[in-house]
Image (tube, rainbow, N blue to C red; front, side):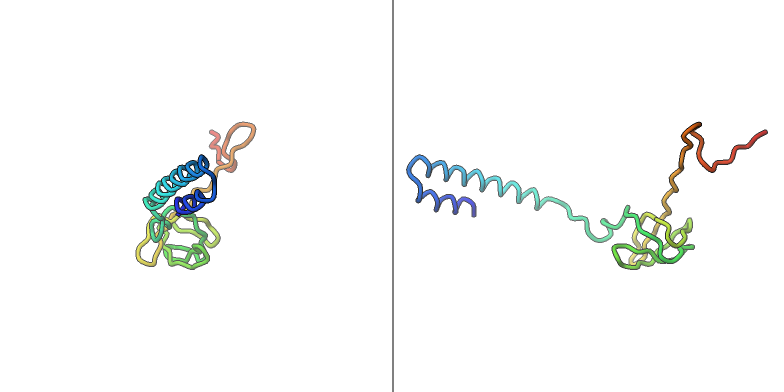
Length: 125
């Protein structure tokens, strides 16, 4: 396509420039082919491949069965460890129309003075 445009344009310009236009069109055509082949080789993440690893929110408590919201849709979910409504969980597997999820580990906050975990119990003997 690009080469055709440059070839037609080469008839409208004087001698040294028409050769440059044809060469520029050829380079553009090669670039377009290389870019198109690269796009064709990419693997599209769709279906279950795209779901595994995503973080979703629990809508109905999963103890062990419940529901999660994924992209505006409600999905059946199974969580062996259990998760309450509003918790964030990660999808670990997909079995037909049921998502297997695991709870996210709660982030531990560190105290700014001693480096202890806030809320951790210290056994004093």
